[in-house]
Length: 124
Image (cartoon, rainbow, N blue to C red; front, side):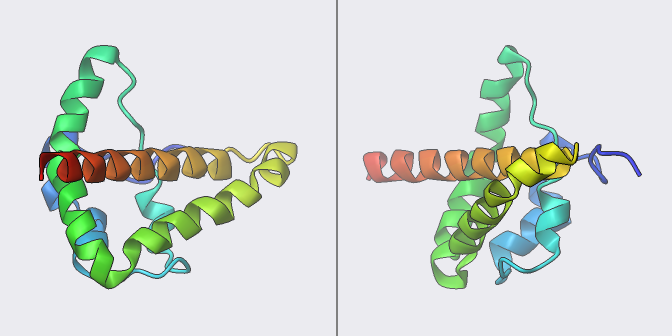
């Protein structure tokens, strides 16, 4: 088994992605295996595509924030980050790239959600 994403995310059709829909619409605990699949994505790294990508995920972040206050998924995401961050040292020593990769991806999601929250608060 490789260390690449188990499923390629098409950034143009994120609203239809089953894992994103689930964390937006229903409660997902920090122990749910969905996080393993959800955090297995590749962030676009080309400077010209980052701004375009962030624009595409803006609406999803807003929906996540609106529903996350009721379903607790914001807390679950932060717990996922803390769990994976605590395992980085061991993962690196064992040459396991999954925990650092998932930690970086969870931090990326948190960053975009917080950025959207700040934008929403500023616009209000």
